[in-house]
Image 1 (cartoon, rainbow, N blue to C red):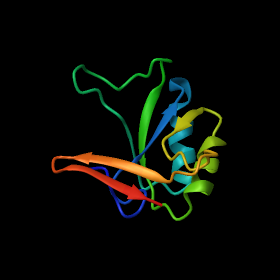
Image 2: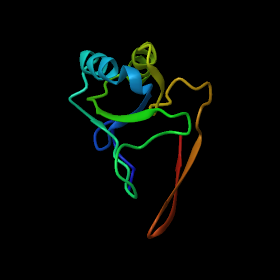
Image 3: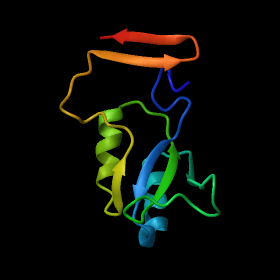
Image 4: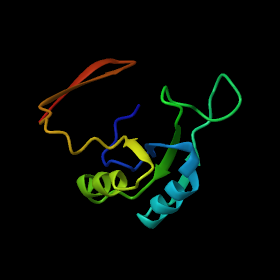
Length: 109
């Protein structure tokens, strides 16, 4: 299950980066407090996951105190295309449906 009590407590943050600047992205993510960074590896082929745009995905582990700030800080790294925090969207989520082996759980705000 991907349900967690705190963002970042169980899963790394996916960060899409331009391959030529991979080392720069790793350094900057460490500067922002990443405790562990790994290039996401493909499951059904050799090598890293490559996005439709030809970029790599880094999985970066953080202790996330302020998701909004961290997302903004990651977005300022020049070689970053996108990251998986999604806290800055102008949408207020009021209802989440979480499917699992025991059925569907509805979580409301």
